[in-house]
Amino acid sequence: MKDEIFYTMALTRISNFNYATALELYRAVGSAQLLYEHRNDIGDILKDCSPRLVEALKDWDEPMKRAESEIKYMEEHRIRALTLTDDDYPQRLTECPDAPIILYYIGNADLNQAKIVSIVGTRRCTTYGQDLIRRFISDLRQSCPHVLIVSGLAYGVDINAHREALANGFPTIGVLAHGLDQIYPYRHRDTAAEMLNHGGLLTEFMTQTNADKPNFVRRNRIVAGMADAVILVESAAKGGGLITAEIAQSYDRSVFAFPGNVNAEYSKGCNNLIRDNGAALISNAEDFVKAIGWQDEALRQQKMADGIERNLFPDLSPEEQAIVTLLQQTNDLQLNIISVKSGLPIGQLTALLFQLEMKGVVRPLAGGMYHLLL
Image (cartoon, rainbow, N blue to C red; front, side):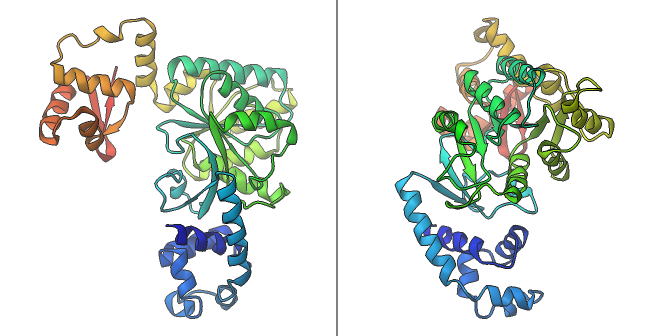
């Protein structure tokens, strides 16, 4: 795995092709190491490979030296490299045609959490926008407390989303347009430091990469692709938040927007997006939860808040209750994980889950997952 990380890092440094081409090469051959091993006969393996690209793939000397120095920095600063084949790589991103072939990550959040939402918008967030973010995240905490909040650590909507997430106990990820050897804007360094213990920082860029303008658009596709939904809070008629929303649409992600006064400069982008059916209109967390289909979680949390969770299922056997208790702690678990944590053999567990399904207590999901309904 270490070798694959090394060669993948080097591959991203080879010039004359972009990240979409890098992903295409990676998937066509199967690994960056194999690309290196076949660097002198790559044209025989990939028949439609352009002559320019064939030549570019022959020279790995500088990229490998750069990868070596980067790995040393990573080891000194607890930075992880996640390739496409790593289980911790954001799996939602792998569905995207231009996914980064490697990401650099520092933090403790699960990048594959069951519920992930990206909150984006203008750098000139108004008091109206700040109030929307504050109320939305606070209300979301009451109905769906297990959500990962993603944004870009920029001024305005981004930093407000991160800070409100932290204030409400949500893990939050900042996707950066530069390497992990710096924080931009520098004024957000204290929030970024707090996020390392309650979320993390993620980027596709090596150290010594500055926050140049093109990098923000590249950053935006990660913000869009790693989430279930993108929420546009405020935006002028043009802006990075709108770009992120458009990218999310192209990835078949759910896109939502808060409306605003028709004469408000930083509501024009949201209003236009809603008008053009590019986003669903929401006015609060309840709208969002209902629209995205997270009502089951919201209902369960409300019942817990009302103090009746323990009495929901009075007719369960001890084994059934053990399964329910486990799913109450961590919902949406695979069959084999439930077996390991409950100590029940697969055969018996399958029968018990079927009984719970018939009682309306659990629901099977794709991939052998089981979801507690209440």
